[in-house]
Length: 502
Image (tube, rainbow, N blue to C red; front, side, top):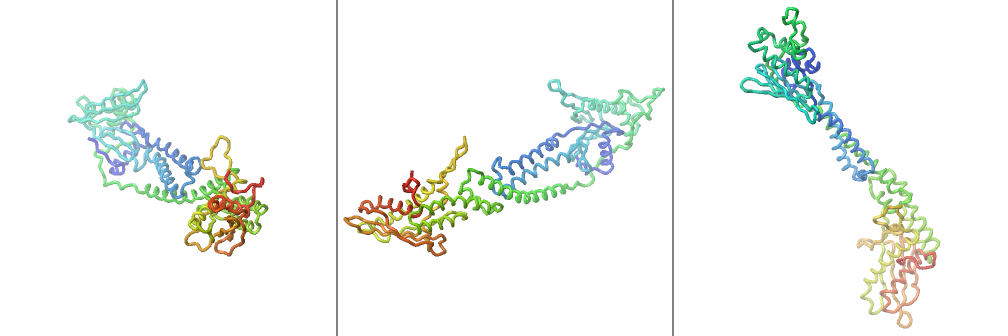
């Protein structure tokens, strides 16, 4: 039956013949030409741009948050979808009904010798020299025409069929084929001796006019035939093998690689800008988000502006400490620490408490007291600053899932690392005997704004009051913490100690 070829595998005469028939839509050809449709290219022409636009909108805007992801990973995602979109779009032009030298297109053509079915780059050729009969079936759905199936009966119980989307052309092809079968039969007479081209033009005339072209004497007048293509290939052959068309794939590869690097650079810029816009949105700016921007080394475009905005958060605490710290030297040291944090990516401050002198019977509680003081001090400082720098309030109708007081974001305390030589706050204290079985606490404070540099202040103070031995693990530690924060930071406007949880 039919043999399928790649269009550019055909021998040159057959290839040129079919191109001439196709390019003229069968005009002047010795057969019936019916153009068909391929919906996939049209779908690709629509789907391709949609994929491209959706990909760019989804990854280059903040709508879905993808722009905040790693630029390289996003570039891989973009490249995959953009290459797909471009390929679908271009495929619509590669798969047009007309085709090109390598693309056959989409059409059906019958001449006196062969039935040709072209689809994209392939063409199926079925010999029909021995056609016996042809008929058609029109298919409808709810009264709407769908397609027509042309069935061709050949010798040796062979058959061929084609599906057409043109009702009138399907009927013409059936008339054409039946006339060919009749002309070559016993009743056709001299018509069987016509050349294939002439016989095809004659059958085509009959399919259009329902009668033969006759002169005044009722003889066939061949001059009335429309025949511009007067050669019909008798035996289409394959000439070699078609080489795979690698050029489009090379272009696609080049496009994909270029797309990746271009999108990676674009993503880096847009991601930087998107994160900057997000963390700088007033009045919801918070130090933790500004520092998140600074911690990401890929963010380079707005570091100066973010650092400047971050430093402003320390203005109020610095002013408060300067005015309210009860121990001016220690308060000055606290100011130096706050100033050192204004432009740092991470506000990490190390603290160390050491009990230099313990009362008899209380030496075993020394580690627990040191640890508890460290926790009380860190929490107290955060509560102190949070008293006048509370959490950012969300807009109406919005709930923040992780609200944090702004004041608590200014300093992050850590215990002294094992390998550290110095710490920012090095606080030693001694529990000394006082009158009547009571005890007092003397503290010695060393403050460093930079642990690699000399201290900015070294001073001592006494915790107000005396304490019983039973109070040394509870009340005394709380009073110690309050005195330390009052000396470093000051009191609240109402005179109450800062740093106490509300």
